[in-house]
Length: 582
Image 1: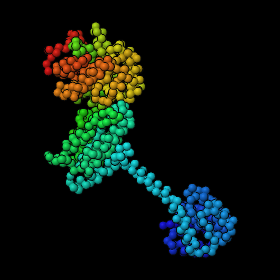
Image 2 (image 1 turned 90 degrees about the horizontal axis):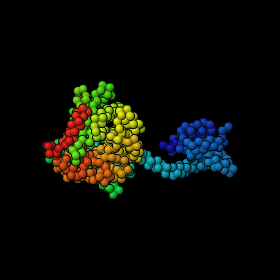
Image 3 (image 1 turned 90 degrees about the vertical axis):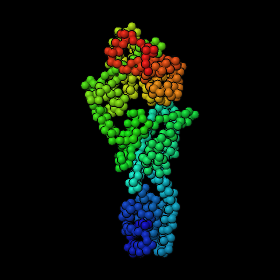
Image 4 (image 1 turned 30 degrees about the horizontal axis):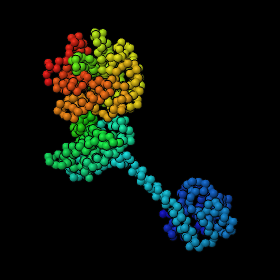
C-alpha cells in the first residue's frame, strides 16, 4: 500500500485530507508540526510527502531542507501546500527540491492528480534501478549455488539435489549412488601448462561428466579438482544398463580420453569413491563422508574406484589411530632403514643403494612410508622422521665408504614437505658434516609431482643442493606431466623409471614403449636411467638392450639391513643373469 505523510498544522485541513486520501486506499501518516514531520519521514520513509509551507517555528522550507540533506529521504516526492500563490514562494520551494506546489483551497482532482503525477514519475525513475537490483540479486543467488568456472552446481546445491533424490528414492524404493571424483596430480597440469589451461581442463571434464550421466542424474564441482556425481535408480541386477559397474566404466572411458590443450594432448587419471543410499547412509552428509572414505582408500591403493564398505570405516579408524601413534614412534625408536642395492646392467656390480624407511609397528609389523606418511596430519612430525632417516642412512653409508675401495652412492627419498621447507639445504649440509659422508655420494630423490608443483622454486632449490655437491634423481618418472623443457631446466643426474611401467612391459606394448622413451630421454639429456621393480630376467634383458644404466628390484635383492648389504659388498656379489631364474 502507498504511504503518504501529511505535515499540516491546520486540524481541519488534516481531517479533510485524511478522509479524502483514505478513500483512495492510501495509508496516511499525520504530523501537526515540522519537527514531528521530519522525525516521521526519517522513521517510515514514506512514498510521498505533502507539507504545508507556513507553520510556526519550523516551516515547510526547513522541513524540505532537512529531508533533502539525508540520503534516506532525499528522493521522496515532496508536494507543498500553501494559502499563498506568490511566484517568489513557488520559486523558493522549487529551488529547495520540491516536486509540486498546490495552493489552498485546492480541489480533490488537483490533489489526486498531483499525487498520481509524482508517484508515476518516481516509478519511472526508480524502475531501472529496481530491475538492476533484482538482476543483481538473481546473480548473487546463482553464485551461491553455481560454480562460476564450470557452471555446474556447487557443493551446497549438490547437497540439496542429494537430499531431494534420497526423498524420491525412499518413496519409490530404489537405490541412489553418490560418487566423489578426484583428478590425480592436477597441480602438475597447472604447473606444466599454466593455470589458464588448468581451468580449461576442468571445464572440459565438467562437459564430459554432464554428457556421460543420465538426464535424471546430477554433476557438481565440489572444490578445486574434485567433482560429485549423483546417480539415480542404480541397480545391481545383471544385464541392467544402470549397474554401478557399467556406469563407472562409462565415466572412466569418457574422462580418461585425451584432452587437447594448446595443441598438446593431455591424459588424466581419475579416482572415485562411491557410497549408496540406503545401504551406506540415509542423509547427504553420511553419503558424502562415506564416499570420501572410499576415495581415500582408492588413492592409497592406486585403484580407479572404490565402493564404500563398513570395513573401510574400520581401516579409516585404524589409520587415524596410527597417525596418533606416529609422533611417539620416533621416541620409541620404532623406525628402521633398509637398503635395496642398485646394480649396473653391464657389469652386474652393486653401484649404489636406495634407503627405504620402514615403521616397525608393535602390532602391524613393518609398514611402508606411503601408508603412514601419505595422510600425515602433522608436518612437523613428518619432517622430524625425514631428518632421522637422512641422518641414519648417511651414518650407515659412511661405514660402507670406509670399507669399500669404490664409492657407493646412497639414494634417499625427499618428501614434498621436506623439499618445500626453507632450511632443507642447511639440514642436508649439517647432516653431511655430522656424519662425515662425502656429498658426492649422496643422491636425493624427489618425485616428478613434487618437482612440478612449483617449477621456479624447484629450479632454485635444486641448484642450491647441487652447489653443496649432492646428486639429484627424479623418481617415479613417467607418471606426471613434466616435459623436456622443464627437464632441461632441472639440474638432474638421473631418472628413475617407475615400477608400474616395468611390471607389465613384457606383455604391454604401451608400457614397453614408455620405458624405451624414458631411457631415450635420459640418454639425450646425458642422464643415467635406473629402473625400479625389476623382477625377471626378461625385464633385465629388455632394459639392458634398451640402454638402461642400472636397476633395483627383487631379481637381484630385496631391501636389506645395513649389515646384510655390507656383507654383499664385502663378498663383491654381482648379478649373473645366467644364474638368475624368472
